[in-house]
Length: 152
Image (cartoon, rainbow, N blue to C red; front, side, top):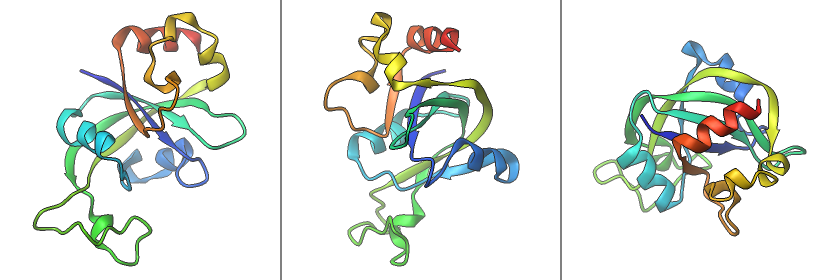
């Protein structure tokens, strides 16, 4: 099993939105970065755990846990000209973009803020904290995962 951190703006899709979906499961669409796409397409497996991170909000931070419920498949939003994630260069015969389904596991008892994460020397190598890293999906080591869970 692997561990991940996946960012979403709570105004677009929050941990509560995931909780409220049928089966508490939803596809993670709209990723338009090749490196993040490759991680979803090639590395994410059913049962992998992810931190659900709220970004671009008053208090960015880890708010919950979800798991991969379905391995990668073509992101159909790329083919829909009416969708905000439409990509005219992608087509269903040779898709460019992929997504996975994620399932709600639980909300954390509190938000573990970006500010708090930055203060922990044990997390110095966490991809989220690297200068210039703007990826919406990133790997988390098992040691980082356990350390962050212990902060809760």
